[in-house]
Image (cartoon, rainbow, N blue to C red; front, side, top):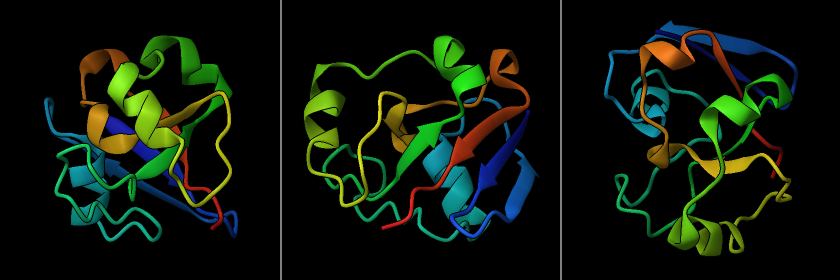
Length: 104
């Protein structure tokens, strides 16, 4: 599946991501600035915070309870489409997904 990250300066990084891979892992593997993933995807650091583009919000869905609590600790502004990218898995249903890396 293809994923595009829009960076704070408006530039974009688009890559093919293997099914089942977390989008935090994909971002780190492709050096997407602003997506750190300090905890390695263990849902304990919130350094992979992204905003899901509005057109994709319904398909990606909202955070589960623990992720929701972790989103309260993010450095950048939390918005209704905020997610931790370690909790979003690549799938055919999300082909073309657009994620926005918030400015910190």
